[in-house]
Amino acid sequence: MREDPRDRKDQCEVVEARHSEDSIGYVCERTAKQECDDCGAAICDLHAELCALCRKVFCGSCLFQHLKEPHAKPAVPILDEGIQKRSA
Image (cartoon, rainbow, N blue to C red; front, side, top):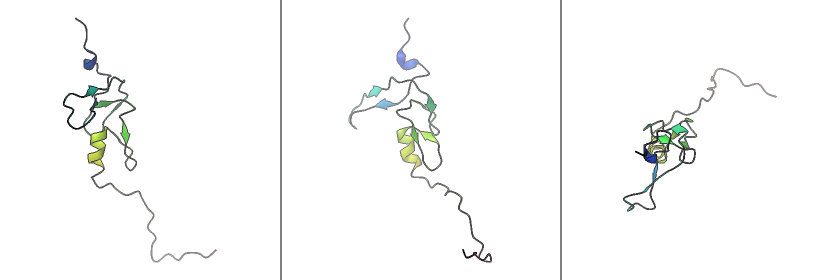
């Protein structure tokens, strides 16, 4: 019995669709090199999306949802009001 290529564990799990009414879609045939940080799907480099704020990797749909969440702002030094700034 021949192995179905869709059953390979190293294959990207993203299903591409032409439009929202496309009920079948096409399975990406690329090799998965990363994993979505949210849903755990295996994703290829083409479908891997990086969040610029937290530097985590997501599939496209998870990144869309992830960006709706508030992120921690990068550390900014807090100046103490009691500290005098030096003049140049």
